[in-house]
Image 1 (cartoon, rainbow, N blue to C red):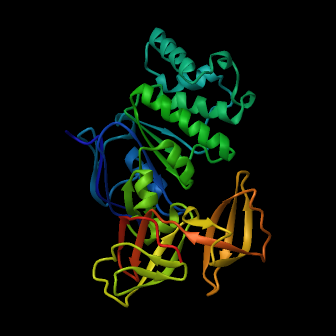
Image 2: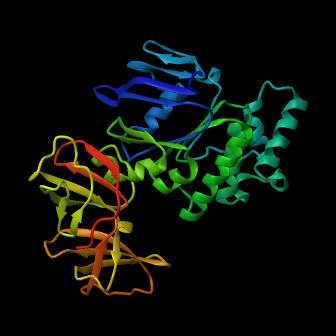
Length: 362
């Protein structure tokens, strides 16, 4: 079965700088994906290449087995059956909601155009706002208009270039879920560009983490969090620190927070230095524990505090604790490790990810 979207060994450049470097990925079927990474990593450039706005220096792009781009040739954007939803929405202020949605249906017969617009107004739940102008709508409603306009010509793939970035966090995640539902109802694939991992988790089935134009990992959210492919993914997804350790004769990693069970990375022997990824939910606040750490900072999150803790060595770890455990900076509190997924690196080597029982108590 042909992949829905296939990017093969892509290079895209703004000479003399290469922006996308040897990037390959596949969306095996119609679904929802996300390109996630820091600013300047090449996310939007990759989206523009898929849309047909940037030429390739190397590689090819295919949608449902049909070649869209290769070196020296590009199918015109309007022939690709690809829609695009921009960060600034680009709604026409002088057109009503109905006319904005209908804008992409020029060339359709009038009865078909009216039927499609009405169908989309129902789909995005804006029927009662059909005659309003963009400035008369909330931010979320404007997003729905832009989505309906992008979906109007029935694209097979919709590209979304950080369209929710101007919204507050709660509305952003809610709208991402709504857009996902709408795309699935339409039977269209979606590819979102974002720097917000929580938005990506809410929206996408598969997520690609980009760094300096390279695809570090293309996977589901669970594996990105628990089985990161390298140090960059481990540090970019979720919050965590790399805790120094050393492999002992029994194969366990000895750390300041106790011994950690797990298969050492390939090539590691007793005495080798390693680093273990420790996330906030791996560090348990336990008043009975003999291991103490000093509260350096705390962030109130309603049901929880996120504590930044300093260990006696000066190393730093993060800890999530219920908010009724209210400890000011400077106080020493008891902690223990409880890691279900051990992510271990040999210094300057690749990552080994394994599931193991919780660590032994220090």
